[in-house]
Amino acid sequence: MSETEVKMTDTKKKEKTPKTPMDKKKKRKIIRRCVIGGAAAVIVLFMVTNSMAAKNAGTVVYTTAATIQDIEQTLNTSGTVKSEETKTYFAPVAVKIGAVNVAAGDSVKAGQALVAYDADALDDAKQLAQLKMQANEGGYESSIYKNNKYIAELGEANVNLSVLEQQIEDSENYVKELQQKINDKKTALAHEGTLLQVSLLDWSDQPDSEEYLNLQKLIQFNSYEQQNNKDILAWQKEVDLYQEKIAAYKEYRSEMKSQKSSSEGGSMDSGSKSQLEANTQMERIESQNTLDAVEEVENGILADFDGVVTEVEAVEGSIPQEGTKLVTIESTEKVKVAITVSKYDLEKIALGQVVSIDIAGKKYDGEVTKIDRMATTNTSGAAVVGAEIEVNNPDADIYLGVEARVEIHTAKAEGVVVIPVEVINTDMEGDFVFVAENGIVVKRRITTGVTSDSYSEVKEGLAEGEAVIMTMGQELEEGMPVTAIPQN
Image (cartoon, rainbow, N blue to C red; front, side, top):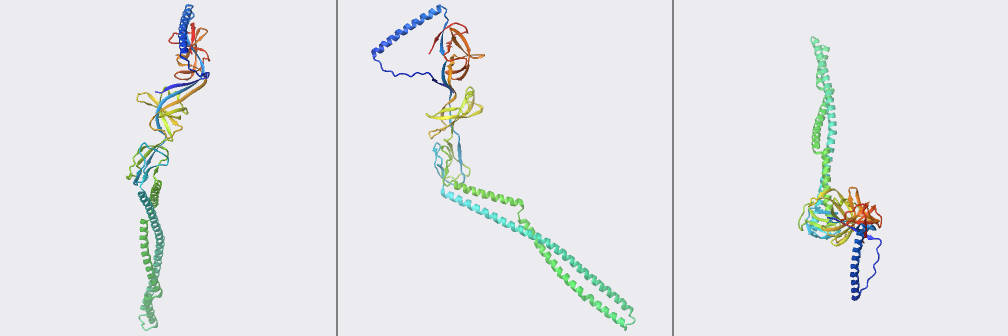
């Protein structure tokens, strides 16, 4: 449990004069005089008391004077020294450990190597990460090149197919026009030949006539024209030429369709391309992180601050997986004392209060920096509230985990009226004291301030020098006569 103490400074202290040793004879004389004087004083006091009682002078009471002094209230308790900063170091790479330089309980300095990796294993890991990065970059560039090629071929196929379709359509239409001309020409020649045959029949009864002979010539010429007409032959030649073109166009169209199909199958859509880029970037980052981690631990895993090693799991010669816990250290540069206070002392502490700390016999300065807003139950079942005290001037002599004694300076008042706490009484209306005034008991209401186990500040109700009755178990009532005997 915590205890409250008081520190008081008497503003009216007198300086003591140095004493000189007395000889034995003189000392024996003084002792005899003191004994005789003391006995006489007792007899006189007995006679005075009996005389007063005989005269109804009042009950004898002892008093103490209200004085002006400085008073300080402190809360004394104990707590556990803890670090405010803890860091656990994890394996950044899966590389063989060359040496473990610390053990649990060791003190370390900022920059000190805690764990060292095997140099050859680090070089191998570095080269592997570089090769992975190169392979990743090369694979990405190759994929992009192929994709661009497929895209170009697809674009070419789409353009060519469009042109070919139009060329085939135009050529076929032109062939149809030529064939229509040929058919029309052949039909006209056949019709003309028919007419000539009919006319020849009309002149058949005059086979020797000039008309008949001319008709025969015309029929022969018509027959020749039907077989060898130069327009028909020219058109037919052009038809044959365009048929070849159409066949070539269609063959090229088949090639372009095949190219389009393969290009569409080989090229990446937007989603596939985004996935490739993301995967490439992730692999690039992973390889770079490995390189960074290797470079970071080339000189070993270093302590970030002065502290104490509290946990070691690294094993020399092992190959820990990435992310495996290796070493934990707790700072001795940022230290606190964790305490608990009862509900009775809770109202006395506040943030920012100055604290005197004793850790293993060494003194430190501190400050209340945290008070929990929720109570817990201690081993005795009592409700307690946790608080933290920051050590302002920690050093290398700090021991973590040990018990520390703390003195919290909770309140202070200077040059105020104080009285012993045992003379203060309490009833339903509050605090009061009995004061001896002109041989009469007076009940005086008071307002207290800074209070300790021994003394209490009186903010209202008493003045310096007033005789406060020390009841000593006596039953007192306001107005009763008393004989006051002051006590130092």
